[in-house]
Amino acid sequence: MSDQQTGDTTADIDEAQTLEGGHDLMIEVDGKMVPNYDATIMSFEEGDIVTGTVVRVDKDEVLVDIGYKSEGVVPANELSIRKSVDPSEEVSVGDVVDALVLTKEDADGRLILSRKRARFERAWQRIEKAAEEGTPVTGNVIEVVKGGLILDLGVRGFLPASLVDIRRVAELDEFLGQALECRVIELNRFRNNVVLSRRAVLEEERRGAREQILDRMNVGDLVSGTISNIVDFGAFVDLDGIDGLIHISELSWSHVNHPSEVLTIGQKVDVRVLDIDRERQRISLGLKQTQKDPWQQVFENRQVNEIVHGKVTKLVSFGAFVEIEEGVEGLIHISELAQHHVEDPSEIVRPGQEVNVKIIEIDPDRRRLSLSLKRLEPEYRIHEDAFVDEEEEGEAGEEYLEAEGVEAEEGSADTESPAAEASAYEEEPAEEEPADAALEAADEEEISAATAEEAAETEAVAEVETAESEAPTEPEAVAEPEAPTEPEAEAAAEEPEAAEEEAEAKE
Image 1 (tube, one colour):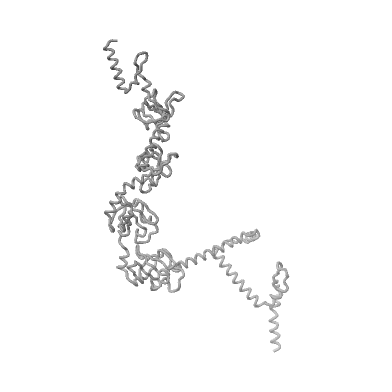
Image 2: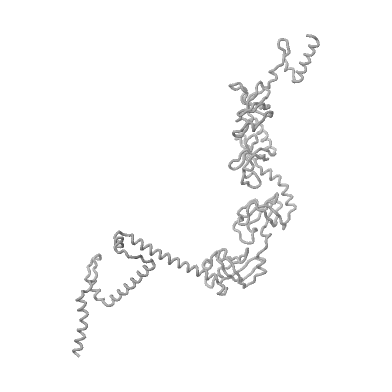
């Protein structure tokens, strides 16, 4: 070998050593320096995390070059924590990925890797650090489950529905696929449990906005907002950064049973600021203060002893409330319901009944009206007419029910025994009489029978006593007195005439 050739070979070897970064990359074999291929192979053990480049994507696996003598195989079920994933949706050729070594050589001599387990280890390290420092973590929503969302953080993180937003979200499906920034509020690696809160991040962002809103807001201001929530005691209004409460008593000038009667979630409203608690960051709002006060009109336009028309809205033990105008109710005390003593207001009026009332007192300071029914002139007492009509309707209903009951009894009597059915069949009338006509006929028969019985008792007491004494003692065989025969009747009729003739002859 010439000096020039030797110099070139030495230069090539030095360059190779320089490029590869170590003398171990070249070894002497049989007096010759040859590349040390074993030195180029990456050294690792099972359980280590390695980095490689995706060189092939198949339907059921992905091949990754990590600098080993063969490419590593990542099965589809080891790509992601998601279930039934498509490898082409997770990685692409040329992507650099981390993978955990599961098996250096399986039965087929393949290197088996897991991308999801590498991400799991790295994710736990990142999550634990974020939990310690109080910094947020970001993950994509991969699943909607009962009670919340599942985020992909490298591990499965659970975001409860109540912590998704400042206000509870009704439809969680709209967050599917979105990247959410959350704070770690609970961590248990042993149980693989990570609980997140997006609400904590949002509240922190809005804290500064709240302070600015409170600084520029004053009592009496008219502000606009959106109804964010409705509860039994009122409604919450979102004022673009802070929530204010409209108490149920501040919703309307008239009585409100539940806030949902007046407002709906999402409704835009203008409200008046009633009070501000800057330390507790609470705002009290009023809706009725933006509306015209109906009481003011009453105070200006109504007078004592004036008769007005209204509707009974509610009965209480001490009287009845009557609405004389929209949003204005007055009280009829129980002592003002009638001239006589009243135990219960329902004896005189009913809820929903229209009445005329007389105003007997107006109290602007206490916003109260005292009304009276008993002081009305007779021509204005329409409530009494309505009460009489109700009583007549009730009596008519009772009579109808009694008539129906008589028909039912007659029908049941007809079907009580076979003998009665047979008798009814034998004496079947040509035409059925209406129920009312049958009842009248029965009444007439009873009256005539009673009259006949009284006459018989007066004229023939002796005969009745004799008949009773001659009657059998057994109650089942009581015999009625026999009617006299025709000859006997004629003889009885002739006896008074003979007596009169004899008397005339003697004279």
